[in-house]
Amino acid sequence: MSTTLMDDILYFRATDKDIDKLVDLRIIFSDELYGKQPPEKEAEMRKNLRSYFEKEINRNYISWYAVVDGHVAAIAGMVIKTLPGNIKNPSGVWGYIMSVYTSPAHRGKGLCRNVLERLMETAGQMGISAFELHATAAGEPVYVACGFYKHHEPTYRKIVAG
Image (tube, rainbow, N blue to C red):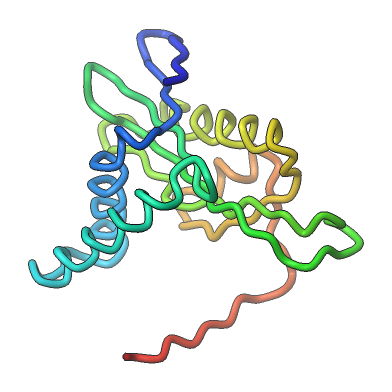
């Protein structure tokens, strides 16, 4: 477990022992974005998240989180994906940053930026130098301050119900 102490804030790189935290925080993040889901839908999401994190933590998914007074106050995760390379990213390896969340009581204190910087530093040590993310309006200023810019290509989605 990697830890760093800074102004009574502990920073941890998530391991397989943190899967419950990762699941809980992803649910909290989702609830804040989309509203509280019915219990059966949340149960299905918890099951799928647990399965994903058990397979991918510190393989194709890395995460850092901040603890204040014994409680997780902020978190950021990154999916590592490989696509065909291009002129700007010849390796084709991308870090897709997601699930960036700070609890309401700790917003505006730099925790988000700190977990994001640790996440990107870890990715850099892994040879990842290209990153992308989707931002909420509240998160956009943090990402811009960390050097992200709005890309000109829009994202299109299609979700086929099963």
